[in-house]
Image (cartoon, rainbow, N blue to C red; front, side, top):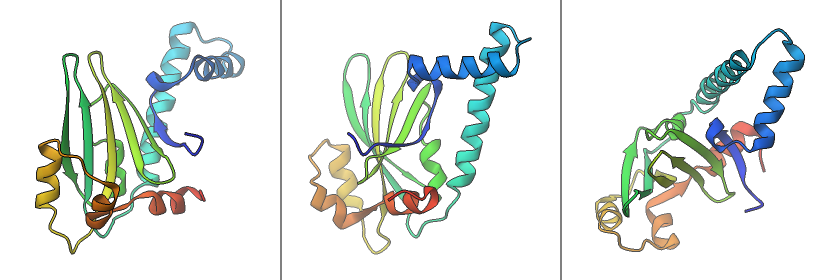
Length: 169
């Protein structure tokens, strides 16, 4: 996983070092703030960062976005899908998790989401306009294995779009 490039992550995915760095910054820049005010500033900055990333990713695509989900629940897991609009910024708000980490692994745009009782994983792909994906989504829904070749036949990676936006190679 050395090719991981983070697009956005909430504080729930921050390391202790990330949080300590943010606290240190606010203590140095705003010495009159108490601990609660510093915590609120960190959360406010993350919210502003989220909206900035939504703006950065405001790119209309040729096809809609297919999300393949591995939904972890406290008692079991399940597989599913969702079809999103054709705007790239949909990858940031596709699901209602308490915390998210959206990233590129160099091949796909992926996300992890966690709540108090589950951990879920998502893969985002652009649907090829000329393809009827009914059979593919039926197989996803019923839990059949989807090979990378088959997925590439019906969809394409979002990585080239994201790489262009952020200047990644």
